[in-house]
Image (cartoon, rainbow, N blue to C red; front, top):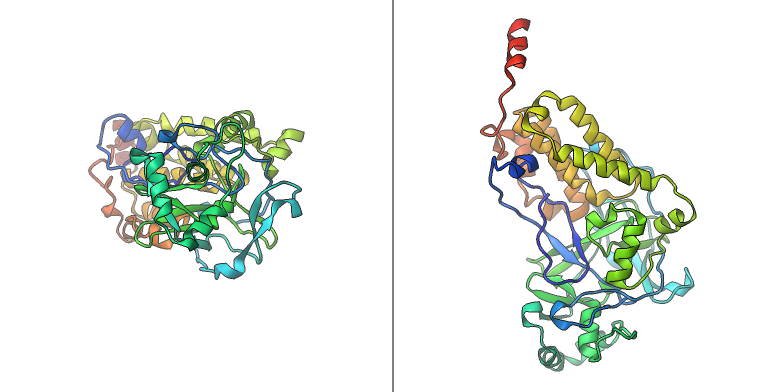
Length: 401
């Protein structure tokens, strides 16, 4: 998996992006990398920045504990889904903004589903109503000048954004709101009216990605979301979601200024539901496959595939669907590197289905996955980096003849 760097210190959502080069080959210098990545950041109106320094603006939130509901249904094992049907929903009928105290007795607002939303659906796409220069050009005067040059309608939207009130809040109102609500979009920081109201969850049911050609942020459903369920995203890096609850709470408290009380964290606060053990097991498995040598992958393919399928199952059970991309990538690259046409085609379709769910069909099709599913020899690991079988394996093959 390759991800790009954040444009600022805002909480950034990293997506698993198909990497055309096998991780263990890269680590051992066998091939060069051509990294491609997508990242987008997110914040919401009821949380705010906790750092005062403008050159390193960050949505470090100070907010009452927020909650989310478990919206997942019994899903099919994604490892066996070779295609996915996307639903582009009319966003005006899919969600509504509710005051959190109506449902959770907490302050702030959130987005709630007004109808059942199928997995992979485009929930919302929104253009920023105002943009500010990235951190290389952060100046209080520049922010004020941009604000003054906007229309009255833009100023009204800006004034409705959440403003941080605690002791660490920036004294300037305009800077305060930009630091609290801005989302990195390419080289700018964008302000959004609706996106800014989505709350955090440690097992989010949705995620977003920036479409530069449209100049819009897209929000996709990671899983089926039932009517009345809160739509949530993660404010922290994807890898942070794999950490123990105590580590996640430290990160959220330090960076965003709140103690998470999402459904996942509440359950763990009462008793260890087994999720922590599953996360520990997944982290151990990931370390194991990252240490694999080329020869091991060739001779232990069946065992490695079992390990990877179990990893997908764990991520599905702990509802971290956006982390499954690195597993699908590894399966694809392993099969391509070994020169297995049928398995490579199947793995490419699984990758395409996954990225369609989390990034949208258009973004998923920008990766060469569909082409590889038709012609596996188009994969960059085919066949020049395909490792040779060990001598003993060759002798066994001759003996069978």
